[in-house]
Length: 263
Image (cartoon, rainbow, N blue to C red):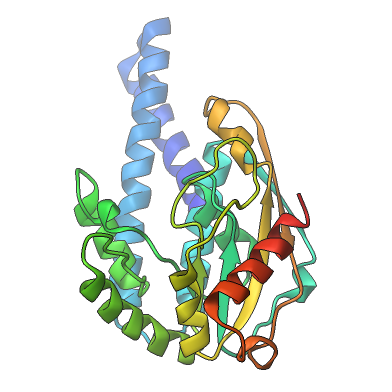
């Protein structure tokens, strides 16, 4: 959807610039970059409208999944990231679900959003709600019911966690990066996890779906126009009944071992 819209917008702008401006070689380059910029503005405008609509729908709806997956595919294609998904048949499409994955780049949420064909939300840190793009990102995050992590305010995070748990109980899948950020930049492995990252699964009585991103750390060394390849390996989910008697440290170690087993 968004990819087709972007390409159509780009061609419309570019042809218009070339035909009406009648400029030389430099003009062609300027027309190209101007068309790309204007196409992204058009995409973000349409995306903003769709998020406005999503705010008025129930928490777990297919419209959100289609929109988030579509914008994620456009971003990955624009930055030339090829994603190969393994074991997609292991995704549980019903029931409470929390997804855990290793985390190496800012593209990881978009990669997983493309790989998992289920309505999900994310757990962004509070820094993303601030800055130049903070107003837009905060609107987007709130529209898809994200769990906001406020690092210097545990009380606020606890309140947000309680709401996220209720969302999980309504079968909105939640993506969590248990490392608490990009910790290990040398390889794809999880070195350590935060025990608190598993509270949402325990209190939400959710199944756990471990996912391994293979090759993600290598993207940090490549320019945006170079081809990048990522493998997404989906593991069998862990049922709530299988881990409910364990503490969060034990659960975290088990999940980390499963994720690292594919690396």
